[in-house]
Length: 66
Image 1 (cartoon, one colour):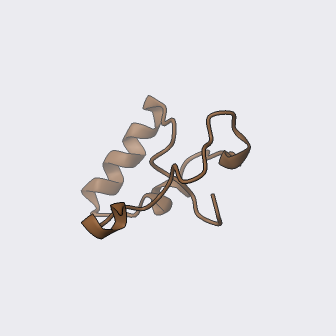
Image 2 (tube, one colour; image 1 turned 90 degrees about the vertical axis):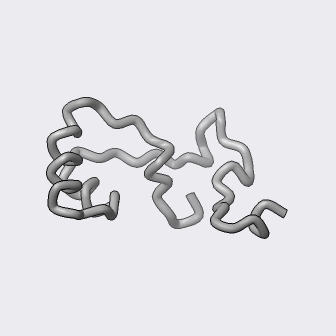
């Protein structure tokens, strides 16, 4: 989406769990590093029927919601 991977809008199977657990144990918290170890498929999200403009607006601060 706009050049970024929306990794929280995803389906992860239970087969991913050992890789994710190992990453957490090794303090590897960047999800893109974990995805490199998995059979990852990315969809063009803006081509999906549920997509709506603005649905991935980044909110880190109260001002971001205004």
